[in-house]
Length: 121
Image (cartoon, rainbow, N blue to C red; front, side, top):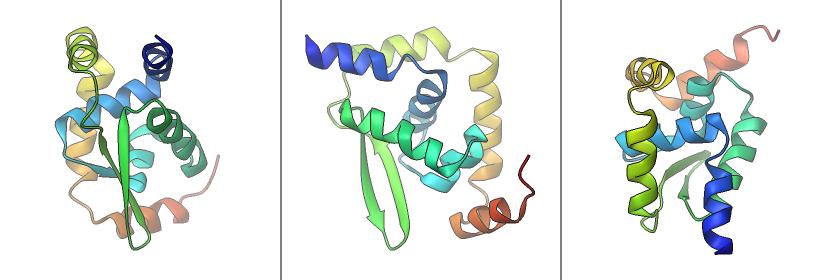
């Protein structure tokens, strides 16, 4: 039961649920792509991904300086089906799908460079 509660708690955050939905539509995404999608800082994305990874919902791999995330092979199918049926048609998830088309058209290093050059608010 503890594992199930940990997984449900991990999905109780809107940004983490958005990441799971994005990963369910793509094999994997790197941290800079997730950062661009959520429009939050890299440390915030890292915290979100750590929660998802500790819950066993995502896995990561390092490729040079890039960290890529994908849904875990052990992601409970019923939980993923629930998430998809609950939020797939929501305005923010549809907006995320469109944003990802643009985000994925750029190499990760360009995304990181562009993000560093933007003024912080």
